[in-house]
Length: 212
Image 1 (cartoon, one colour):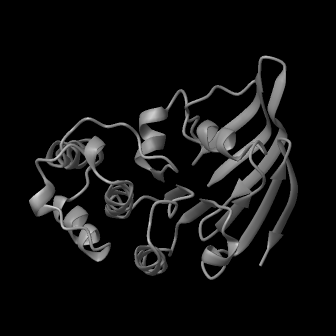
Image 2: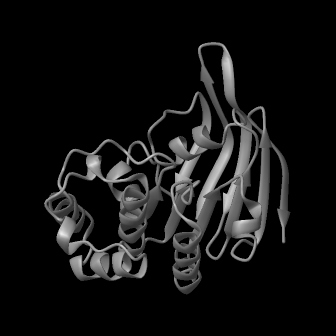
């Protein structure tokens, strides 16, 4: 469960989030939408413990994502819109993920294959030097292999071709039970078959929250 209570985040004098209260429960699959600057990314970073709230509270399964960050992040799979500039080789990255998050290497290879990413000939390559599509496919494979109870995807198909997008949504459909799934998206048509809730944000506020 994710509980967000009276959450405000201010940068200098600008409010990025303004007194937001939301709850997400198991089997909620949410499309989080809004224009650039609506506060979506700030909200995600607060959930992940990247930012400290200016006011209010975030609880992930009853835990504070800042003071209990290790425990909280064990429960979350996150794929950002822009892949991070990781300089590790694919082999090093996969080994790190498996050792730090109790992920099975065979599961990473399985989901990479499902995303039509052939890992074996690329294991010595730097993640940083991969194409945008290959990076995204690997991050998606890792997110699925982690088998988290909370899955957050920030425009995850931005670097994917249409066939890879179809594979991604097919895999999510197979792994959606008993989870919270949160999609930050401008493409509602892509996720409409997966989501049961649509939230629109504007100027740091929730302007609508509808079940579908």
